[in-house]
Structure formats: C-alpha cells, structure tokens
Image 1 (cartoon, one colour):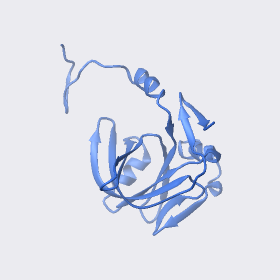
Image 2: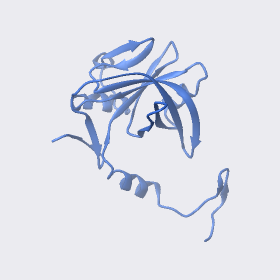
Image 3: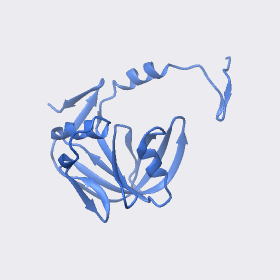
Amino acid sequence: MTSREPTATGPQQPGVTPLEFRQTLGRFASGVTVITASDGETRRGMTASAFVSVSLTPPLILVSVDHRASMYALLGEERVTHFGVNVLSAAQRHLSDHFAGRPGPEESVPWFTHEGLPLIGGSVAQLVCRKHEVIPAGDHTLFLGYVEYSRYTDDDPLLYFRGQYHELG
C-alpha cells in the first residue's frame, strides 16, 4: 500500500473522493435536525442530518459540525455549555432550508426557550444537551451531548434521502 503526503493524523490513505462519499452516504435516509445554541446574545441554528444517538445509559447523542459553519464557532466557545437538537416535522421543510443557508423570514421561525436555550416549536422532538465531549474529526468536529431534557410528539418527521426531502408513507 502506498501513502500520500503525511498529515497531522498520519499518512493519507487512498480513498473515495468527497463527491463520491457524499453521493454514497446520500443513500442513507435520515431525519432532519436543526441544532440550536446561544451565547446569551445571539441565537443560532444549523440544519444537520449528521446526528446519532450514542448511548442510553448515560443518555448521549452526537452531532457533527463542519469547521466552516458559524455553529462550529459558537459551539466551540467555552461559555456555550448547552445546545439543542430539534427533529423537524414533515411540515417544517422551510425551516430546514432556512437554517441550511437559504433563509426565509426570521419571524417565521417558531422560537421558544427552555432554560435560556433556543428551541424550535412544532418539532417532532427536542433535546437539550450539555456539551460532554468535543472530538476533532477531519474537517468536522463531533460534539457529544449529554441529554438533560427531552420532549416529543407523534407527528411525522421530515426525511432526507438522495439530496431531497421526503415524508413517511
């Protein structure tokens, strides 16, 4: 096996291109979440499909955030100790677009707060997470969150598959 130029994490191994990787992983259907946080002055949200449950005991989840995202800078702040995860409902496609960089009117976001943390009303589920661990991972950082609060409804979720939104049924 040959290696490419060494990096901070060791020799670079041959692999798939970023486009091929993205297209392949696009075949994995996922729910759509909006990660929310605030530094006390600014509230921010970011659409994310890179969300996973990690452990039931203790209750841990993980979100992956691109280093170019403004949410990365906010979550990296030491004074930001908590973040929210909002699982969007099938009726909230516009909010996914809004927080993915195609914003609609800010007043159409149904913000509410839980102990000062901004969350999105009408979501299928909301989690309030304390930052538990921060793990560098290539061009992203993994934020492991300890779930301190959750709520959910029985509404249908918004799904993402092959680069498009879908609904159950």
